[in-house]
Image 1 (cartoon, rainbow, N blue to C red):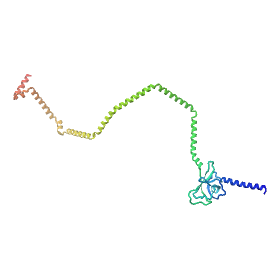
Image 2 (cartoon, rainbow, N blue to C red; image 1 turned 120 degrees about the vertical axis):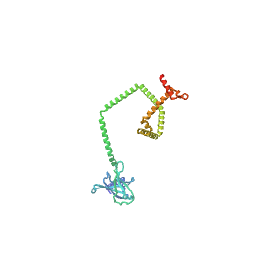
Image 3 (cartoon, rainbow, N blue to C red; image 1 turned 135 degrees about the vertical axis):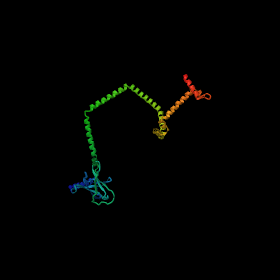
Image 4 (cartoon, helix red, strand yellow; image 1 turned 45 degrees about the vertical axis):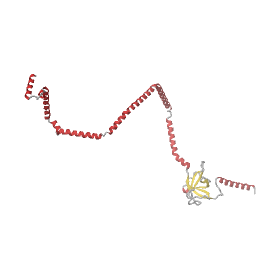
Length: 316
């Protein structure tokens, strides 16, 4: 065997070993029996042959082929070589997802209930884990709002451009006002102190007055309580009855009923009483002037009394 043949054999063996070694490093084990399953995706998002198939973080197979199905709206058919010992069921899901932070892809195989196992060559339910892209899509409105806010802030800052002098003048004026206020307070410190003392004295006087008023208020409250306890309704009812009776009496007087109305309406009684009083007055006057006519022993006769009266008139 010449050197050229030996070199060729050695090179061929090296290439075979290199191929087997590189595939072994990618997770391809040519000596382990596998079964082939399929999954159909709308978009494989960078999936390549030899990417792993993982169950609960453990590699159970690899992607062996990727093919585009132009007859089915350009969907992607992915062939997976999975360990022969792993049983796949109809409810299992092959989710295309990112495998690490570098963006390498993998198919995450979720095996659910253990009913209805799939046969080799069957198609597994396919899903795509949108992951970061979905998060970015959800965050798009927020970023848009942030951009609008930043734009408005820039407009506000631009509108404030050149207002620094105005703000400085305002602050200086405010400083002057505060300084003048401090000086005014300092110059009138004694007056302010006296005013506060007077207010304090006034407050004390008011407190004392209020303390003196409290007994009066208590007394007034007692009177109010007594008035509340009085049966005004019954009292007013009695007054109303009395007024009604008086009104009835006056009505009777006005209508001429009863003795009192007759005494008021007929003046003959008044005249008789007046005449009686006049006669009684004359009698009393006569008794006073001539008591012996009535109180002398056995009195006097009428004729003697008349003679005495005539004599008395002559004397007068």
